[in-house]
Amino acid sequence: MLRTIVVLAFLAVMIPLDALIGFPVAFITRRIDFLYRLAMGTTRAAARLAGVRVETVGLDRLNLSRNYIFMANHVSNADPPLLIPALPRRTSVLVKRELFRIPILGYAMRMARLVPIDRANKEAAIASVRNAAGVIESGIDMTVFPEGTRSRDGRLLPFKKGPFYMAMETGVPIVPVTVLGTFEMLPKGRFGIRPGTATFIFHPPFDPASFRDRDALIAAVRNQIASALPPDRQ
Image 1: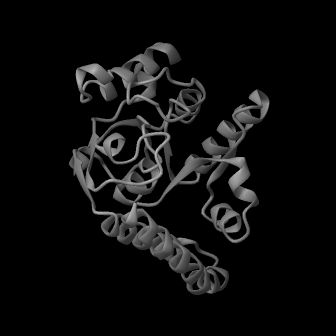
Image 2: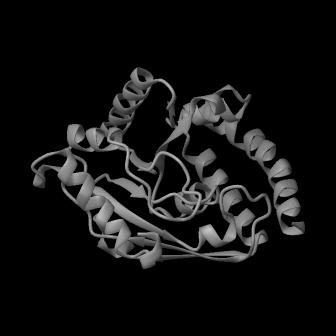
């Protein structure tokens, strides 16, 4: 609990400081890159304060001359802030629409071309997926948790179809990512984070054009993510 309080206090100081330094640079250069690097550095520092180590496996499988859609299982609130800084370059993500209403944070997310999504509204969710496709086509990677919510018991949930529509529409390869260790640190319903190691396994990319339809692509990605999970969580 004490570690969590320290991390929250650190973030309460650093987020406004990052904004104070990074926003003027972003306004002058009209680029988000410096602010993004500041945010990633702060996030990595917060993880260290929390006693969390991050290990990656398989990043050497990626050809960084092209873009990717990273799809990962989701078991903890710790997943996005640990996974995103571990990626090889800037990425966009689908974010709850409500978060865009927060001053400073919402503006920064728009500048970073994060995509708001309203899961309660089917038509709005479809529009968000189309917006995400536009972000990918502009040359920015996308990171998606296709279960759509955190798993309460760590077991893999059914996948939403929207992100796979996005992949097939853009033709951008999907990189399945298996997340290990974060469920033990911060499962759904717990406040305090426990120290530990988060491991991200990057599987070989899948070309959407190689699959006969969306359902076949969903099954392949799900099976690949599940292949590195413990048997009781597949």
